[in-house]
Image (tube, rainbow, N blue to C red; front, side, top):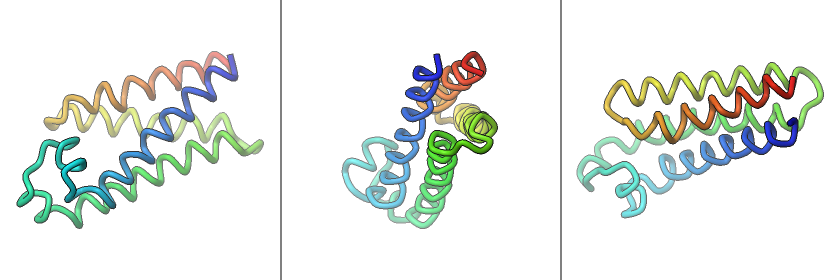
Length: 119
């Protein structure tokens, strides 16, 4: 079960690294605008904010990856950062980005459940 938990944690971490790239580097590109359904004008006006959000997604990914590679407090790292992802996804879903529930919260909740079961 530990392998399943680690694979799920890694998948959540990689998702957040992808979001980092989208928000920090591809925000104004057609790919970034398509993912977030924004106009070129909106993307230009919000690029700094999106970069900041991307940085936070990078911190979530870093914490999850740290939890995968460390022997010290790995369980706590994984659960803490998965909880952060769950909360971020719930907030996103509650404020109009419904796909955050399915793209962030549910995968993170499944990974957290697997981490808890793997103990």
